[in-house]
Each structure stands twice: as structure tokens, then as C-alpha cells.
Image (tube, rainbow, N blue to C red):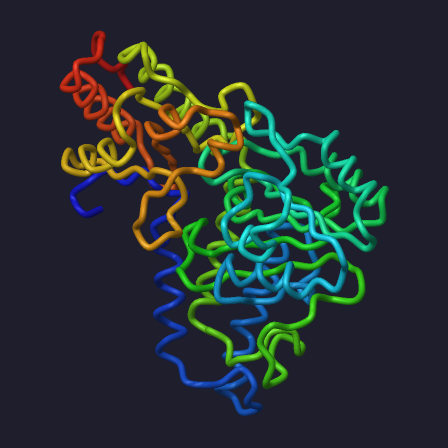
Length: 381
């Protein structure tokens, strides 16, 4: 891809070939899903097949899937459409959650590994005006740290609150069951799992009332999100969800991904002893590594690696290319200097051992040029 090694799957996974194929088919077909003629029924079938596939990915009922323009809109629908009086979010949520919460909210703290403080959450729940909505993500986009969502849900429900979970990063990389985890509202984003950009979903558990719609007009999505459906995008989302579920349910696939990540981190620490793996002490996604190279700015690393033919990320890829200070790493208690030297390497369905080797060689060479102590060569894949 681009003649480079792409290791930024958490920002956006390359579209799978099967996704591209079904989207091309859907684009070539006429028909509005709201029309009753043959072309309209064909379009409706594509939408409903995708709805069933997305529901199956997270163990939900198809009628509880609301298609949106992406994870940001799904988060906004969950939070802005909530009719309760209190909103409690963790300090490491995606900016689209924080934006809905507002600047004056006091977020739930996390510990040094990036795990939400359950004691602090329970204290906030005791003091919250009912009914409350808690928003805690499944897995962090920057560190890969997986949150104790089932425990969060038990606390929330004990206090009569609902739980919203942004699962954009975790779905397809971990098995996800809304019922087993106790999630009431769940956010998904197609392009994180090899689907197209610009399509996502808010998935509901069986409760009433549903969030109030943000977009009003026609009766699409059972009146919960107006606007003609993005048929090709939704069709691609459905195929991506089916493939993601297979990956998440396949222990061999998960172990392969974890082995690549672990080898990457072992080689990074062996080659550059000053390096730091952030979040290493907590449960993490099998595909994500957050590495700090003290004294070398994140932006410098991303640019140097790009020139060497390796693409990685720094922080969240959601600010129009801007590389701002990470609120996630700050919440974990990292110093500004260490947080400012962190990059994220994220693997996915197309990643190989050669990609990992290429990254290690380029990263170690950058450290050497910056005057750091660098040892040996990378281990064989």
C-alpha cells in the first residue's frame, strides 16, 4: 500500500477486498430503500442484510441497530439524545464523547495503566441526579487498554443508570456481547474494521425510550435517524462486520495478532532500552502498542518513519491532521515530556511480520540518529 508499511489501523483500516466488491455492486444499482418497486426492494434488502450482520457482531437484535454517518454521530446520538439529567464519562473517552459532555464536566479518573477508577465511578453515581448515563469506552484508541466494562455496567445498573460504550476500536478485535457486558448503548465505526469511512451505528439493548433523534425528517431508521440511507456504505459495513466477527471469534487470528504486537514490543525494548511501552500492565487489544521514545517528539517520529516507508500514528486521528497533546496520556499521569514522545503502532488484517521488522529497523535507526543507545538487530519474524 502506497509503497509503504501501513501500521495505523486504529486510525482507519484499509478496506477489505470483499467490502470494495460489494460496495461497487451496490453503487451500480439504482433504487431508494424507501421505494416499493423492485429496485427499492433490492436496496432495502442490502440495508437489512447489513443490519443483521452488524447486530450479530455485538450480539444484538437487528431492529436495534441505527445506522449513522460514523462513530462520532453515533456517540452524539447516544449522549445528546439521552433524556437523563446526569452524564458521567471517563477521562480517556474519544473527543466526540467529551464534546457532548461539555467542558465543565468532571471526568472519571483512570489509573497509571489507563483503567477507569471504579471507586471514583461509584462515588459519582451515588451523587448523580437520576437518571444518569455513564459513557466508558471498550478499548482506548491510543493505548489499546481494554476497560472493565462488565464491572462498570454492574455499578451503573445498581444505581439505576444506563451504560453507553464506544466500541469502535474493540469490535472485531475482541469478542463483544452487549448482553454479557451489560451495555445499553454501543457505538461502532465501519472504517475501524476494514469497512468504508462515513458509516457507523448506534446499537441499542432492549430498553425504552430510545435516544431522541438528532436528525428529523423522513421515517428512515424507524424514525430514529432521518435521511436516505448510504446504501453502498452500509452494504460494505455489513460485509466488514461479518469478517470482523470471524476474526474476533478465531483464537488463532487473535493469537497471531498478539504475537506480532509482543514481538514488536520485545524488539523495541531490546534495540532501544530507553523506550517505554505505555499501558503494558493492563489488558490491551492484541493489535495496539503505544511506544514512547523519550526525548524525541511524537511528530518527529511519525514524519521520520513516514519518510522511511512506515506509517504509524500519534494520538487520535480525529483533528484534521493536527497533533495535539494527548488527553489520554495526561489522564494516565504521564509527564508532558514522555507523553509528547509517544507513538501508536496498530496492526490489522493485512499486517505481516515483515511490517513489524521494517518498523523496528526504521525506529531504531531514528533513535541512533538522535544519539540514543541502540543495540543489535531485530529478531527474525
